[in-house]
Length: 179
Ligand code: HEM
Image (cartoon, rainbow, N blue to C red; front, top):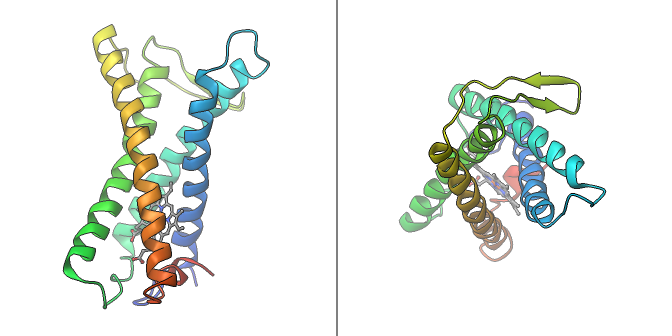
């Protein structure tokens, strides 16, 4: 079943959720790993090429997920949640959607700030849309950096909340997002 129902997420949103989750967790790790590399390391160029291409893949998948969510509404939160849990869940989901857009967009702006295109594994190029001055580029770098740390913390809280609801409250929250 591709579409969401009143009780469960559909196959497409589930696939998108877990694929984007793996990519984002991988990109956070790759980001931390690659900034410590020097020019003489074997992965110096390839790690950055992969980071840019996979980051743009997250952006494309996030746009598909957002359009799908608007067209086919997700199941309502589990009925037994208290008010503050509902507010926290909606806030966390909203911030995760924001991060899925903001982090790749700022990464793209940094990469293309001097007018160079981003190569997607030498398969095709995503052209630069705007050229940034140094001050705007610095803002994009700061946002990309701090938003990545913030999303790492948010993902841990989000995952712990899902596990707590599944295994302590036993309200089936995680099962709705699984097969
Ligand atoms: C980078 C990683 C992740 C991102 C960006 C992310 C993002 C999201 C978003 C935006 C939603 C709301 C979907 C909607 O209703 O439109 C969601 C739901 C959910 N996520 Fe994640 N997620 C991530 C990782 C995880 C992990 C690691 C787990 C579990 C261990 C998890 C478990 C869930 C569950 C169970 C729901 C459904 C909640 C409900 O039905 O109330 N997520 N996620």
